[in-house]
Image 1 (cartoon, helix red, strand yellow):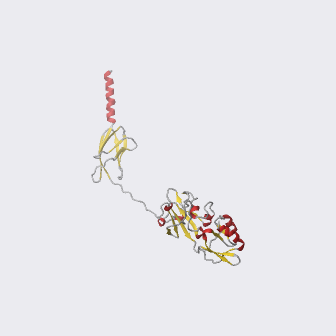
Image 2 (cartoon, rainbow, N blue to C red):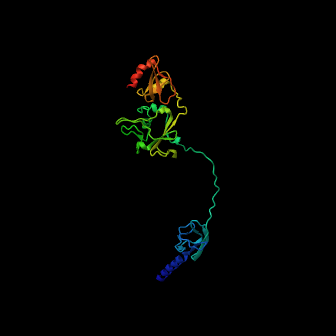
Image 3 (cartoon, rainbow, N blue to C red):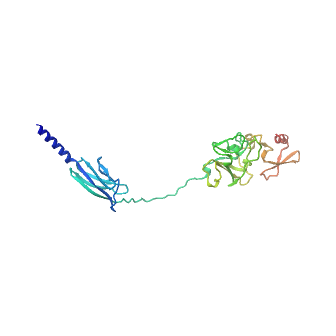
Length: 303
């Protein structure tokens, strides 16, 4: 009985040894150079290995029957070999051929996209500036109410968060303005030297502006003057505009004109107890303060 049991174990071990198939070999390229790290495996199974530093490989499997041995490596075409696994030992010298990837035809079509400063800027019209609460019709004062800016003490200048006032540069019709602020005394905010009504609008960019305005470290204030310097088209009556402006800085002198305090260059006595004004950037010589408004105009100037 004991002998029969030992004979049975021996037979089972013999069958197991016979069922195990050993696959070994080497992987090289067409020039005979060994390929390190190539993948060698039986398709549809977990049995396989990779080639060593000398391109050789060896692994065993208990799979039986017909299988496909696949050898692959990046940049080379896969090498496939059919096998009949019956417990025999297989040895291969596999040569991999470089794969040639042919690019498909590239078709280039024309398209358009906008890459301009206007698409990234905050643009304020002159009327927006003069009607901004607390800005007192000052360009810098109005822009200081926009996101990304900040008011620093009593400076009155245009500050972008993280930068100083000198880092914001002003350009008028593409020309760099060296000093865009008026002189002031300590503890009194300064103002912009330019009236907002001189320009079509104020374009303010805190980043992403073109190389044309590259002198600006923090931001660029871009001002473009009106072509005729005199004509401004507004969809408001003069009475409506008067009600929207700060009376401390603007005065209705007659049925035709509203003047700002900073635009008055000279005052000349005129006939019939009236006054004639000489205004900055105005070619009209007949800017007259109506007689019924002279009485309130003088206190407004002396405020």
